[in-house]
Image (cartoon, rainbow over all chains, first blue to last red; front, side, top):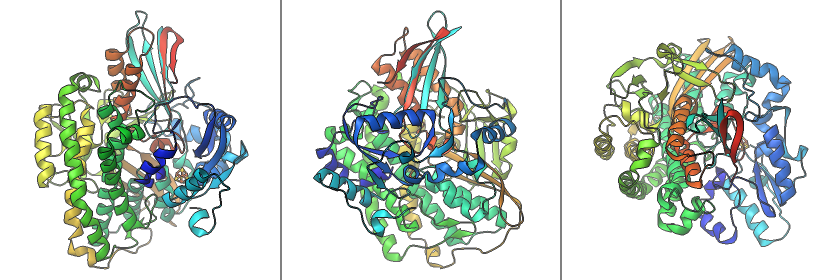
Length: 163
Length: 473
Ligand code: SF4
């Protein structure tokens, strides 16, 4: 959503890029030969794992976008509690008023990974964009450098601070 | 035995989801399920953390409406400290919440739903998005982008950042805006008002041209829940709970939100990480209710500001009283943006904001506290228990999308019955099924904190359980 804080610069961006896969768009399968992907969020379940591998295979520049993608961040706060089984047991069985059970419908509800992983723990990452979320000026700085085609250099507190 | 259709992923919503549509032997739609596939476990891993960290952590549940969690969490903290926060703090919290209603509703309407409403449900999926809208109607897209930006700037002005400001705390808020900053916000109000009035005008013409969608996008009787003021007026931050049925009868009123458990219970289904809350006295699933902009406008006696009340009157006239179609969520969202703009204008001039008293100091005085606020998508509950040192012992969160869970399933089934024929899903049917979900503006990140892309899938299932069609566009 911080991406949308680019506000009217989105018009400028639209002149240079084609949006091929996004939460904002209706294309449902990740296409081949993608130039740049901004990957938000950590890898927490089997579906995430499948998608991130596919994204890596089909993308030239993969950007870990935001602290969850870079470090696991809040998504990984469940890791110190150990395997997800007992957590699910507490929340969905003990703390339900009706029909307490762990959601596990096959083919529908993906299995949780034992640990939540940052993106680079699963596939190689080309660029890290920290921030929770990365503020729009930082996103813009990175995208402008990518569009210009050279090495991307982000330096200084405004560009590489967590949180 | 039933057959099923799968839509995977559902797009232009916030969070990960799939939809399955179940058919009977004759191939007619029996039921539909909206599956939330992400899980984060906030309610568990917050245990042991200090109460004072909770607003900052729970704000991370959602990148769209972090302010809602910030406020509900701070209010639960107020209850545990047993303090009455200073008037300036309450008014500033209200101001931030109004900024958030503007930005979140603008996002839902212009960035996510306008591509369907203005480019058409049957338009090319490759360009049926905000970039397509920018190309097709640059003026409207730019106005919508600037309206959302305006809401975000209010949040940033008060809290120091647009997303996840660490600003509201148990007992009050950290800082107040300077007079010049307030003036800068006020200066942008007229443009914002023009944008929303234009959008309202355009939306109303759609009600006439989209009679089919109005009649099938979740048009059924249900209960409606939300906060209202002491005289039943529109509320977004304080007040008490009211529950109204689709005939307009008040079923419960002025219920202290701290007693929400007497009203609401939660069920679990094996096919979704999102629990299914229901109105406890009516049982599951008969106790289905809706929350959010449509519910707030259905339950209130009036909004309390001039332009918004005029629009509310017209909306009620068009709907014939209580609006029972979820297609009206879009309408209600626009009316609420207008209401928020009018209230922002009043608040900016409030002399209390200069008082300098922003925070009540206290230690832990109660071991339990409930904080409730109206998020853009509906009533949000944060319910905490702490130990005497203020460390969290138990957390229960009920978020807007959860409240709407049963109604969203019902909506998908209704749309599928109208638009899905045989065991294939046409492009237009697919998009209508998704658009029905989008009308609720679900924020699945909230329920489960899906931090990432937000796909949604559709599955068509046969009577014998085999998957007939899976849509992955
Ligand atoms: S905003 Fe923060 S919590 Fe949300 S996905 Fe980005 S890094 Fe994670």
